[in-house]
Image 1: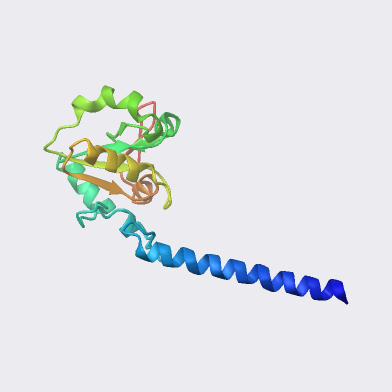
Image 2: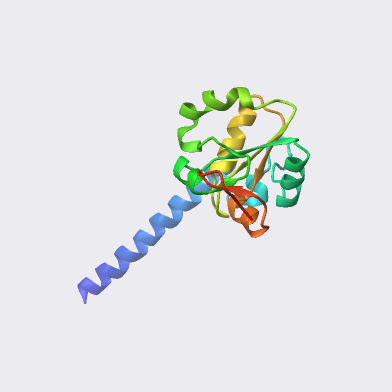
Length: 169
């Protein structure tokens, strides 16, 4: 019987310590000027909204139209291997994971008067978002992200290119 009482008392004390610790942590977080938000918005739209309030997401139709009007440069943020197996027709490869290595090679081909559209593949792929934010930090003014870019481009039967240069429709 003593072991059962000891176990119950220890459990209550442990729960009490955890509760008090959580309450203290929440109070400290509330009074800090840089406290962490307790509820976050992790939607794609919020992740692609800059501190200025501007949303940098672009639709596949708008991206295609800008390409047809020669008003955009498409930038593939995926790996060189993914780029070689297929990419948006006319896209340049600037893999986010090798940004420093590749940027100098294409920096001169990025005119300031055109929209830069970054893309990768998959709803949760952050490569294009991170690349877009880096380009904005470098001073490019008109940068957009085509969410799930490769897949939505292919689903819409827009022109693509493989390493061989053959177009697919």
